[in-house]
Length: 214
Ligand SMILES: [Fe+2]
Image (tube, rainbow, N blue to C red):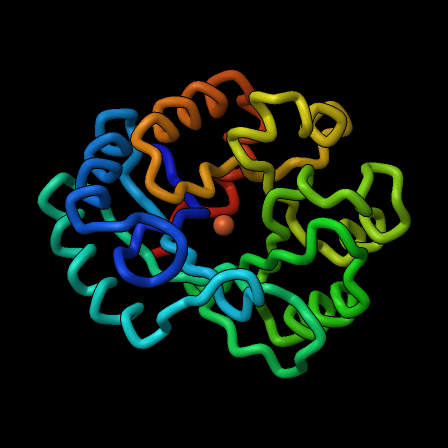
């Protein structure tokens, strides 16, 4: 089985990801060449800084599934859910049960623990995106410990691992997933594959989480 990318913005005309169908296909080919066989699309939802055209999500997903099948990739639709103050978030779980969350980079979000708890109670598996980016969040913080105790999985971005920003998280064994968070960069698939080879313990966690989930 090939690698899986679980965080990407590769639907054209939807969010701040790829700008055209051609760019999307170029990036898909790069994933295929780097040894991937599955990609999860996670358009931004509820993010106050990104204007997502939600009505384009389904038609573009139908289009990308066909384009991806031609290069031997299977695509899954999810979403990157921004946790702000709103209750009853409508989520787009991928592989039947995974929900990817993001929060404010600068200010500690008031409702993260609550929302994560609610989603876990609803039966979802919760993933917190790019943990190394949040300025208020550290490996030793109480909120990190609580989230881990609840069973929330932590994801790091390729750029965060490469820059060293995610080092403490990796050294503490707290990273379950490395992902590209790809907004249209054809160099990311190869870089992600290299990191998955470099961190076999993370790859192992990803395989046990996402294998057999179709
Ligand atoms: Fe993202």
